[in-house]
Amino acid sequence: MTTLAITGGQVLLPDITVTRADVLIDQDDGEILEIGDDLAADADETLDAADSLVTPGFVNGHCHVAMTLLRGYADDKPLDAWLREDIWPVEAELTADTVRAGTELGVLEMIKSGTTAFADMYFFVPTIAEAVADAGLRARLGHGVISVAKDDEAAREDAREGLAVAAEIDGMADGRIASAFMPHSLTTVDGEYLEEFVPQARELGVPIHYHANETTDEVVPIVEEEGVRPLAYAAEKGMLEDGDFVAHGVHVDESEIGLLAEAGTSVIHCPASNMKLASGMAPVQRMREAGVTVGIGTDGAASNNDLSMLDEARDAAMIGKLAADDASAVPAEAVVEMMTRGSAEAIGLDTGRLEEGAPADLAVIDLEEPHLTPRHDLVSHLAYAAAAADVRHTVCDGQVLMRDREVLTLEEDAVRARASEAAETLVTAAEE
Ligand SMILES: CSC[C@H]1O[C@@H](n2cnc3c(O)ncnc32)[C@H](O)[C@@H]1O
Ligand SMILES: [Zn+2]
Image (tube, rainbow, N blue to C red):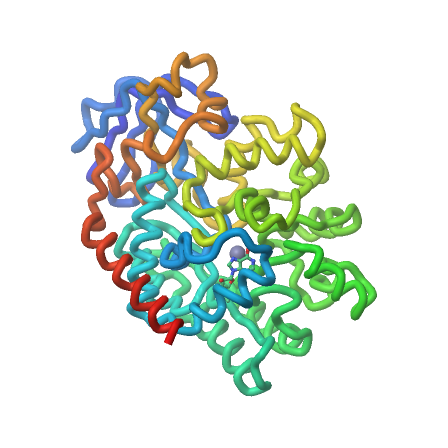
């Protein structure tokens, strides 16, 4: 057995308290062996965590990772115009090569900001899976299915690809990669295709993930045409079951919150994207009170514009209070729970907690910074004050992915150069 000890740090436990302890990891199994005092002596390797907080790796519950290529390409528009006028035309020019370059840039940013697991909906998913496997992260990935603006055969082909990709990649990278069936949203995939393909995803045994109730533009047509709220419509189509998870959930009413809680379908809150696209304020406090599992996600880098879960945590706390008109709503403990275990449970990956027997996925945050001084409350610092640049080390599945701010699984300069070139190629192709 090869062992790694994280020594001298303050450790964030599953009950969201902090204690002084070392963490001993079995690197062969990728599991935490013990959390306690003086565990360095028997370890083969150590990572210094003095003056640092050892936290579960952050779990980004909803992303489009290769959209790093479109960071800053189109800003300051609402969702529908942004997608139709800017994003979808350029995404039509994506290739496996450009998606690989964008994914590498995205996972590099994730590792540098302490994220060890994420859920992602995009195109060229086997290529994304390979890049995630090589970088050493954990992910649940799916091909985003869209039927609008396609003829019947093209729409079916897209849905068939969604199922085939889910079957192909599930369990890759020694189980670090899982899959899901991912219809883009309830308004961009026609009901007939949902009825045909969702049961096939159930047979495959994978969860369903989709954008839901993100803007009022997505709610009104369903209410008008179907006579029910969007999540009641989703339930009719078999898309609201235990293990399923929806992104955004901004415009959900009490009846839909009840449906989510009853079904065991989770919500991934994307506060930065919701603010930037002016989509609205999700009722996070209300959903949590009703027993809905809520995780946190960045959405893509084109609507955020970064992939830092620490930024997202602060945004979630701030907008959660505003939405509830209550400064005690969505407190620091809730945010820290949502960005770790909450997201992990929502996307169905076994991670997000530091305890014996749990997967060894963690980040070490350097506390020796002016903005993290004094240290009254480290949970508060994680929710409100820590930033991506404070992450010293990142470990996933027992493997050190970043040591002393140096990423070991990717060559940073080369990744940035390839991504810049791919972004240029993509945008040029879209302009021709
Ligand atoms: C079909 S793959 C995923 C698809 O989703 C687009 N997208 C990015 N951000 C959002 C968002 O906030 N709401 C809805 N759709 C979004 C992305 O550009 C891809 O086309
Ligand atoms: Zn999204």
